[in-house]
Every structure is written in structure tokens, then in C-alpha cells.
Image 1 (cartoon, rainbow, N blue to C red):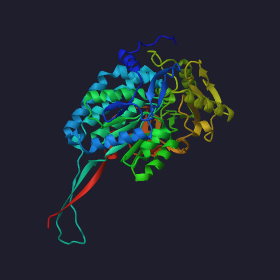
Image 2 (tube, rainbow, N blue to C red; image 1 turned 90 degrees about the horizontal axis):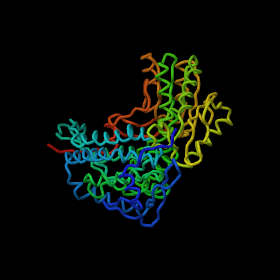
Image 3 (tube, helix red, strand yellow; image 1 turned 135 degrees about the horizontal axis):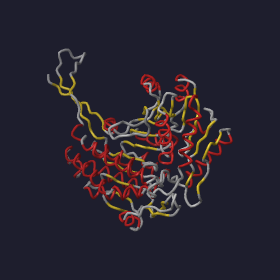
Amino acid sequence: MTTATLDVHPGVQAFLDGGTKRLLIGGQWVDAASGKTFETKNPATGETLATVAEGDKADIDAAVAAARKAFEKGPWKKMTPSERGQLLYKIADVIEAHKDELAQLEVLDNGKTIREASSGDLPLSVDLFRYYSGWPTKIHGETTPVSVPYYPGGKFMHYTVKEALGVVGAIIPWNFPLLMACERIAPILACGNTIVLKPAEQTPLSLLRLGELLLEAGVPEGVVNIVPGFGPTAGAALAEHMDVDKVTFTGSTEVGRSVMRAAAGNLKGVSLELGGKSPNIVFDDADMAQAAKGMFMGIFYNQGQTCSSGSRVFVQKKFFDQAVESLATFAKKTVPGPGLHPKAKMGPLVSEEQMNRVLGYIETGKKEGATLVCGGNRVGDGGYFVEPTVFTDVKDDMTIAKEEIFGPVVAMMPFEDEEEVLARANNSVYGLVAGVWTQDIKKALRMAQGLKAGVVWLNCYQFVDAAAPWGGYKQSGNGREKGPQAIDEYTQTKSVWVDLN
């Protein structure tokens, strides 16, 4: 791949040149109470992109107080459902107007390719606000015909009201920072809540720029607050805060457990979108050309840094060797390069720490007896690039077949029949997604019914939509984001009785 990349967008350059990035609290950009800062780096080069204010408990306290004030009084509380919907639609317009700038900022801070950011993350971010802009006027309760068995002849009217929760804390991951923030902000605001966002320390920039755009769109002060910082300080303070009504977290299962424990103090609601070790299953009657593309997209999209990666590829024995050759051929042709290169198909991993973690898993795979078909090495020494990596001769109990690697590493395993592969696919502590490739519709539907996963793709992979719920089974989390189900996550039901006697 040549070294030529896209010219940096003037808006991106102006943002990066604008000095230390500060916290958004109560509609104002402020320094951290401690005065501390940290650097965020370009994973393609290892060079510093910007200096960012480092929030911790004191800043979380201030942000929660601002969010509570905005929820209890002021223009946000007085806004009608229709007005909230119009504001969400305006936010979508503002994001769309700045889509090229935001896509580049995401690439520089996260490492993903400009193709993925421009064609995937940004359109869906816009669509999330447009989808949820229609919801505020449709959140309603019901009337219920009640009979009170211990009060014969009694007459009552009963109805329910769907109300906002209050202040929601959202801890955002580094793999899809802008998209995940929009996925939370849109339904949370649609329901009338306020929010405190804690971006991942690796990727705070797109969320801070989004904060500027939200103010530009007219979001009232204190409704959205953004506090960059580290998990053990800012993240923990948000999860355990006694005046936060709910916390939503996306990240590893291990950290998800700690968030749940921290939230127990005031028994706040918790939504968790956690890890996965997802099966991508190819039967011998599949369209092999289509399945090969699906295998590639399943594992190498976003450098494998997705909770939905199809990192366990099961192929029926008849076509196993052919499938390995097809995926290895795709992998060998995919040379990692800077995400801003217009033809880049795979960028760097997000950080040196993540790169070393993935390389460590590759070494473990080799030591445990798996066969390295291709890849497995770091590329260059100026960024955090790892070759797309394919293993065969993988046993179900090997580390690379059980643990979430979160990188471009796939374990390919043969199987005999439907019953066997269903059992092996479900033999995991995770249950986020699964893929099935077959031209037999009955087999496809049997597999969809039997797989213990929150999302099942049949003859496709890595497709999402604002209207389609997302979430996992088992240790892949609880609750659902996107779709109508997210409205339930961010509202509560009040039961009202009226005596008509």
C-alpha cells in the first residue's frame, strides 16, 4: 500500500489545533478540577493527537449535578415531546453536515479505516437520531380494566404512565466511540432523560467534537455532559454515583461485572453490552463465494475489534480446506495501513497495549498446538498494526477458541453435522451474535432457533440498524440497545389508580 492518505479536513485540523480539550459540564467547557490532563494518540503513528483534560470523581460529581438540575427544572423539563423530537432531528442534520470531519477524527483517534467510518459509523449515527426523533410523541401508557377481588362491586379507573428515569450514566467503548455515544444519547434524550458520558481514554476526541455540535444544535445546558477520564477513576465514580438513576456500559465482561457491583449502592438499573466469542457457521450447501466474504467481514471488520467478531469459524468438513484457502487468500491480500488511506481495508489496532495483547494471544495459539496459516506478525514499527491472522487445527478448549481476543485473529474448525456444530457453537460463556450460511431455509431457521445468541445473521454478517434491537445472552450482557426495546430501557412505568366509587 502506498503511503498517500487523504488530506486532513480543515475542521479536524482546527479542532486538533485548538489547545487542550476540556470537559463539557452544564453547557460549559471546563478544565478538570484536578488540573490533570492526558494525551490521546494516533494509532497509525503512535504520535500525540491532542491533550485532553482528565476528569475524575470531582468532575463526575459536577456533571451529575448539572444533569440533575437540567432534568428537574429549566428548558429541558418544559420541552414537549414534539419539541424533543424536533431537537433530535436537528442533531441528526448537524451530524450529517459534519460527517466528513467526524469520520476523519474517528479514524485518527481510533485507527479504523475511512471507508468503515464514512460508510458505516457516520450514516448509522445520523440514522439513530432520525429514528429516535419519532419516538417522544409515541411513548405512552395504557388503561387497564381492573377487578379488585376483595372489594366486590368496586369501581376504579387504572392507567399507566411511562416516565423518564432521570440521570443516565453512559460509559462508552473505544472501538466505535462516536457510534456508541449516539446509540446511547438518542434514546436517552428521546425518553426525556439527561446524560453524563464517559468516553474511553483511548478515543475521546469524536465525542468532544460531538459535544460542540450538540450545543450548536440547541441542546440545553446540562442535558448532555461529557467527562473524559480513566475507568478506575471517572468510570467507577459514574457507576457508583448515588444520584445516577441508571448506568449503561459497553466493554469487556470483566469490567461489566465491576460496573454491576459499583451500581449496587443505590440499586440503579444497569444495561451491559459485553464481549463475545461468536460462531460463524458455514454449511456445505452454502454459497461459498458469499460465505467467504462473510467470513472476512465477520472477523476482520474494524481490525477484529468488535464484540460481534465471528472469531470462531465452523465449516462443514466437505468444504473446510476450500474455506481456509479462501479466507487465507483474502487475509494475505489485506495489508494493514493508515486508516486515512482511501483504499485501506484494515487499519491499526487502537493502542500499543491492545496490539501487545493480540500478539500475546497469537503466541498462545501457537504454543497450544494450533497451526498458523497466515499472518501473526506486527507490521512495521511506527504504529500498532497486526497482520490478519488465520489459525487451523484449533480445539474447542484452546485459549484462542474460548477467550475474546478483540483483534484480527480467527480460529477455523471443521464439523460433521448440524447437531454437532450447534452444541459446539453454544459451548461458550458468551452469547452475543452468530452467523449461519446455508441455502436450506429449514436448516437456517432451526439454527436460528437453537443458537444461544441475542442476534443471529442468516447468510449475512455484521448488519445493524437503528430499529433492530442489539444485545446478548449469558455473559455477553443484559438489556437491549437500539429499536423500540431501548425506549423500555430508559423509561419506568408508573401505575395510577382512581377511585370511582
